[in-house]
Amino acid sequence: MEWLNQIIHGDLFDILPSIPDQTINAVITSPPYAMQRRSFYGGVTEADYAAWSVRWMQAIKPKLTHDGNVAIVIRPHVHNGGISDYVLRTRLALRDDKWNEVEELIWIKPTSAPMGHTGRPRRAWESILWFAKSRQPYCEPRPATIAKMSDRIGMHDCKAKTVGLIKGNQRGGIYSGIARVRDYIECGTGDMIRESTPHPAQYPVKLADWLIRMLSPPGGMVADPFSGSGTTLVAARQAGRQFVGMEIQQEYCDIAAQRLGQPCVVTDEQIGDDMAIMTG
Image 1 (cartoon, helix red, strand yellow):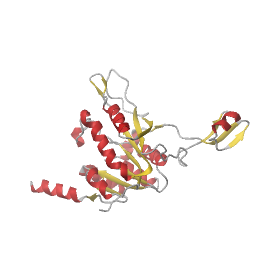
Image 2 (image 1 turned 180 degrees about the vertical axis):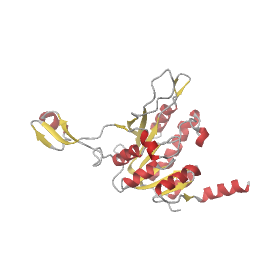
Image 3 (image 1 turned 45 degrees about the horizontal axis):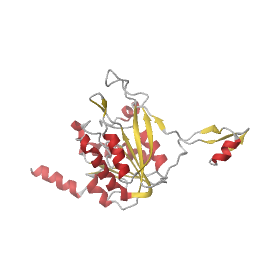
Image 4 (image 1 turned 90 degrees about the vertical axis):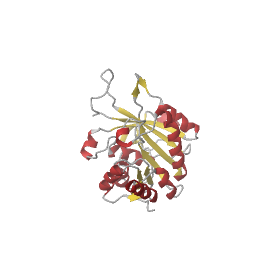
């Protein structure tokens, strides 16, 4: 099956065996939230979510390079007056499965819609859970198109020398140079409206671009096993990365293919499933 720089219609568990081991540098994705949008694409129950997450992450693991990363955009919902614990249990289950949880990044939504529970502040951010195979994953904290110059790299000469990580020019005891990016990104949901991608759980290209440039090397391979409307794939291509996307729903696979300007690939397993449906 052709897979390089493709959006593939099928189940990730059927597709991943066709991808060579240690070829994916970063997985940037947002899996289905536990039964929150089941009317659009099904879902996984809260009780089963941690075990299901461990299963798909185990399938991804051999495909990652030794310093490969997985970034998961997710936030638990409020249920019966309190925050559901399925994301917390998933994080702990992945740690138990020997994944290194490197960091929790944050996506801030400054233009989030003023909706939701009337007795709470509106939800205006989501977590990005960063997992890796190793304790020394790839990270470029100063990506050229994102990082900015700063005159506050080192507050004084002694501290800068002690830290030993300062690159730049000293001016009066303060160092200037390229600063590391922050651990959050402000990215308005209005960007998604302008991108006009009809999907109930999309995120902006800007968000995916930020993660891709930070967590994968130039020319590297980016994968999204829950591609939806293909935002990660669009961002990967514009960032000069190779990509592969997997999407089980034909409708969203078609949207992603249209955005990429190419047809989607269909797995042999999916062809068999479609034929079974047609023949009843």
